[in-house]
Structures are given as C-alpha cells and as structure tokens.
Image (cartoon, rainbow, N blue to C red; front, side, top):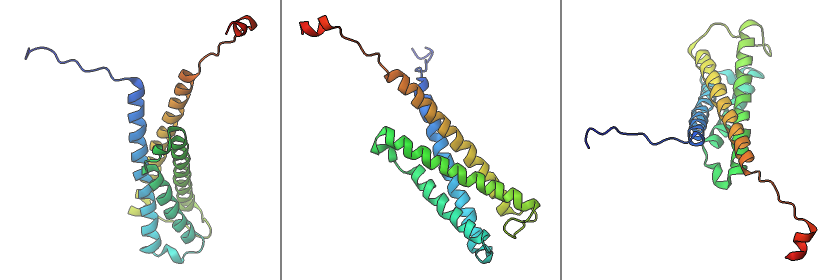
Length: 173
C-alpha cells in the first residue's frame, strides 16, 4: 500500500473561483490600505498638509482608502450572501476609484501642474504609490469580475421553470 499512487480529490470549479476571489479581495484590501498609508505619510511627514488642494486630496485619499480597506477586510458576508456581496463589490469599486484617481493624478502631475502643484522625479513614495495603485486595481478588478461571474452562474442555477397548472388540475386538488 505504501507504493500506491495518491490521488488528489477533485476540486470543484466553484470552490476554486471562490478561493481565487477571496485571495484577490484580501490582497486588494491590503494594497488599498497601503495606498492610504503612503498618502498619510506624505501628508504628515512630507508636509503636503500645507499644499493647498493637494494636501486635502491626500488626506481624503488616506481616509477613503482606510474606510474601503477595512470594509474589504470585514466579515460582511455574515449579514447574508446577497448583501455581503453587494457591500464588498461597492467597497472594491470605491477602492478601484481611489487607486485609479490617485494614479491618474500622479501621472498628470509629473508632466503638468495639477491644482498648481507639479511632481518631479520618481522618489520612493511615488514608486510605492504607483505600485500599490496598480496592485489595488488589478486585485480588486479580479475580485469584482469573479463575484459577478459567480452571481451570474449562481443565479442561473437557481432559476427553476415554473409549472403551469391547468384548470382541470386545479379542480382535482
């Protein structure tokens, strides 16, 4: 028996998709939290708090990233699968919006003034922001697509044709 081949149990495709979506969700949550950390560090330590408009946007990015990151890490599916998925998808879309907005603003400010401020060069904070913005977008984009795919598949399997009863069947009951 020691030389018998070990067979792996088949993994259901739905389970694999669920695990992939959850991994993407948690990696995306950590990525958006790190986007917030970079913005907080720049706001408080690099003195962006004194830069008009840009400083406020850094603070709002930090707060927004913190809120959606915590929601993405929270066990909201305990509220029910439908409402949990809805909350998670909205949080993921919010995080993607923050990351894409941050990325676009950073790229624009490299080539032209944005609200009177222009970046120059790629210091560590900029590189980290670019990396975490991109990771957030990819991971949470995968998560949203996997949830949408699972919901579509789940909804199709729940749809049962209804049986129409005739008047003779109703009378015999």
